[in-house]
Length: 325
View 1: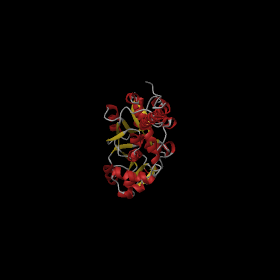
View 2 (view 1 turned 90 degrees about the horizontal axis):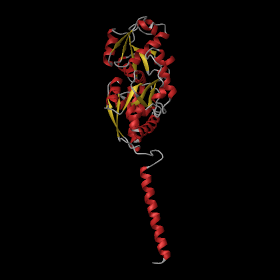
View 3 (view 1 turned 135 degrees about the horizontal axis):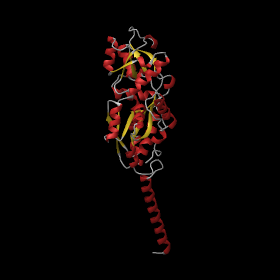
View 4 (view 1 turned 30 degrees about the vertical axis):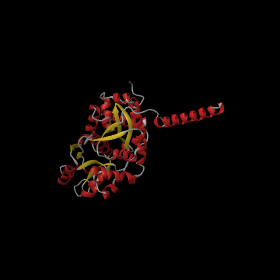
């Protein structure tokens, strides 16, 4: 074999090896996902609420699969159940109200916030009553009896804050915890004057029972208020940094899908079993596509000013990469 032929052969072989190496590199490393995840299946605890709709849309679109993750939903009926699942290890991530999450953080529970989920909009949370029962405007009752959903203490805070702006003494309000059906029965019988609800129950009450909104509680200090976030236990998030970074990247893309209101309502109908007519009535808030320290600090400061927590919470300590190890 001549020297020239040997050189040509070596050149072709070298090029083949380079192509093979490049092919391997391209299948394992990319700018979007530079490192493999430590855990492929993530269990996500959540209630069947509008807050979780973008995440479900993102799963359908394959955003999490593209990050090397498979999501498995762990259904919980209450925020307290979600948080309990996260902290006892039966879930890796939980979608929970900011009210409860920050209150528990103030008590010493260590979280890492993975992303914001939902911010309220006009009429997304409100006081609802039945017409003809003597409670048409907030000032009709100086000492109203208000029904609230079990395990939703933020409803009491929101009601007190909004009624106080109408001249009602917050200390004169009586709260009764009731499920949706019991709320409607209590309104009909007069056992409660009004109920505090969030969507889609507001629209359901309007369509099925002829209920009316007597006061939008997403106003004043609660306008565009951040309601919920995705959280993980501090120790778990720090032990699996690539897994949770992948979750956050896919979550951002998922949240952006909620700009399509029709898609949100369609998924909400599948999630809750409500008919399409009812879900078309549902008032929607916004779904943040970034994790904003200032937004969450607003919630923490309100809880402090309202006396819900004794000490001011520094939200920055709950954010990824910022919490003390």
